[in-house]
Length: 90
Image (cartoon, rainbow, N blue to C red; front, side, top):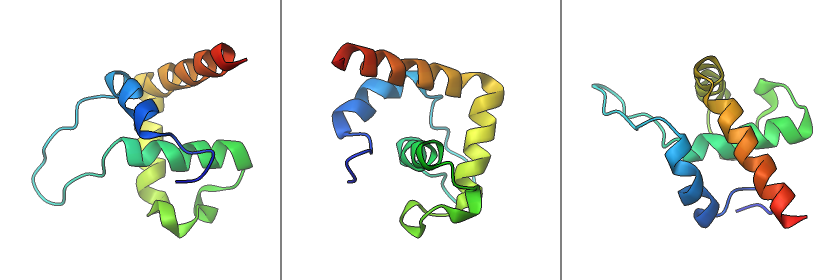
């Protein structure tokens, strides 16, 4: 885990903000928490989607989830949660 990635404890605290993981037919979807770290990396670096490091998986998967969460207002809640944590740490 990189120093700027969510810890397991942070991921557990963040889980209630995320939509339920719905079982679907076909290929199982990636765990929500594995999508947050690449999005945070992109926001921190300002890199385009296609420059996402391979360790994070498909940039298309990450982008798709980001846009769905953005449309649903979930990403705004996540950013507010991150900001509150940063404010609490000083």
